[in-house]
Image (cartoon, rainbow, N blue to C red; front, side, top):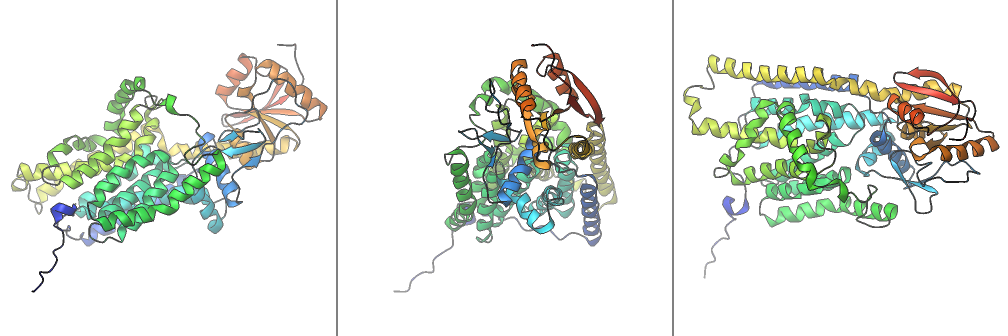
Length: 520
C-alpha cells in the first residue's frame, strides 16, 4: 500500500505568519537611515556619563567589579572600637545589603548588567566599559526595532520611523546616558521577541530567543512577565518551544545559582520583600501618570496603539503578541509605589515602548486597508510623500522639543559630578579619614578606599559614639553631601558638632568635622 506523504502543519495551526516580506528600501532611504545611526552613535558617545553615582549606578558598578574578581561579597569597611547603638546599615553603602553576620557587603541589584560591564571591561578596560555597555545597548535597541518592524512586513520608511521614535524618545535618551538597567532591559526584551518571531521561519532562532529572554530576566527580573509575548511570538511549533527552553538554560541557571549563593535561596533577591511596594492603592495615581506622560513619551503617533483590538481578526498572533508585550508591564507597574511620582519613573515600563510603536504601525496599516486610503493617497504621488513627510517631521520636532524641556541630554553631565567631586576631594582628605555620606556612598566605595558611614543611619547619640571611636583611632571625620542631605543632616541634628565647609563641586559639598558640640 502506497503511503501518503506527511503534510506540514498549516500556518493557522502553528501561528506562522503568511505576510509577504516588505520590499527592499530605496538606496537613498537606506543611506539616510545609516547616516542617522552614525549621528546617533556620535550623540551617545559625546553625551554619555555612565559613572558610579547614586544607588543604582554605583550598585551595578560595584557588583561588576566583584564579578570580575570572582566574588559575590566584599568585607565591610568598619571603624574598630565603635560601641553603642548602631544599625546594621551604618557601614553599608547604597547598592549593598549586609550579610547575616554583618561583616560582608552583598550587592543588592540583579547581576545581568554587572555581568555585561565586567565582560566589556575585560576587553576595553574599566574606564570605557560602562559607557560602551550602555551606549551599545541604546544603539542596538534602535537597530533591532527597525529590523523587527521589517520582519513584520512594514515598509522601510515606516520601520525606520518607528526606530527613530525609540531612539529620540525622551525616556530612552535619558536612560541611554547613564548607568541604569532600563535601556539594556529594553534591548534584551526586543531581542527576545524579535528572535522568537523569526523562529516562525527558522526554528534555530528560538535558541537565540530563549537566551535573550533569559538574559532579559537577569537584567531585570520582572522581565519574566514577557514570557507570554515571547511564547505568543513563537507560535505553536514544538521545535521552537524546545529551542527557546534550551536557549534559556544558561541564564536561568546563573540566576538561580547566584541568588542561592548571595541571598541564601534560589528565588530570593537583594531587594528583600517588595510586596508592600506593589499595592492596589497606587493604581489610580499611576494610571493618571500614564495618561499624562505616555502621549508625550510615545508621541501622539503612539496613541494609535489604542486601536490594536481592531487588528485581531486579520492578524491574531501578531496582535496578541504586541498586546501582551505592551499591556503586561503597564499593568504590573501600575501597582508599583514609585510609578506615579514623575515622568522618569515610567522607566520601568520602557521595555514595553517598542510594542507601542509597532502596534501603532499595525493599526495605521489596518486603517489604510479598511478605509481604502490608498485610493486617495497613492504611495507614488508627490502629494502623499509631502503630507506623510510633514506629519513625521512634526512628530520629530515634538520629540526634540520635549527632550529640550526635560533636559534629557544633561543627565550624563550630572552623573560625571560624582567622579569630579571625589577627584577634587581626595587631596584634601587623609586616607585614614572616615567619610560620612549617603547619596555619594556607593560612588565613594567604588572610586576610593575610605571607610564610609551612612548619616541616614544616625541619630545624634549614634554620631557621638562614632566621634569617640574615631578620636580613639585618630581618624578624622569628613562628610560629602548634596544640598537635600545638608538640610536633613544639620536641621535634624543627626551630626551634632562644629563643621567647616571646605568647598563645593557642582552641588556636592565637602565638610570637615572640627569638634563635638553639646550633647543632643
